[in-house]
Image (cartoon, rainbow, N blue to C red):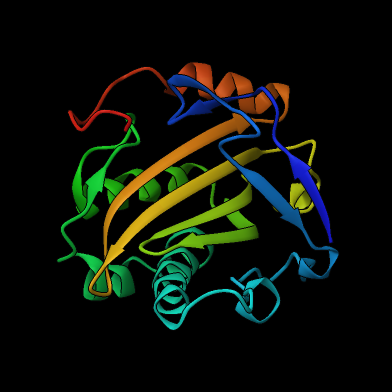
Length: 196
């Protein structure tokens, strides 16, 4: 394993806010065994889980993984509404309306405009009730696995009693088309929860 400190990386959060991550705030653990078939993406916990996670942390990761797999990979909104709609979800991503209904509407719009949109989880970190996924999102199937296309995304969820109760993100567009998409769609604040 190779540890890579994040130094001065500027990322656009929710397509509207600029953030920076320093080495004191985060370190990524790189593991080349997390490569998967780009045609059928899923959250591969067998490859991404760490022995250092507690039983509670693993359960929290499983909740986030199930949620993300159905939201960002399968786009299965019937499943999501059945299993997650009643979660008391506070959205800190400024460009998305609050609550699960706001998130589902936002992702439905993305997948309507970009049906090949997907989210490839590269790393998972967990600290108690906080679960963080570091992922590569693309809007075209042919760009899956190409780290010069799409978006570098860091999502953090707070899990309480098996429910997703809060979300933060940081998003970095990786190419000209993605940066243009951010400029065209970003900027409007759709909730009053603040970034932190």
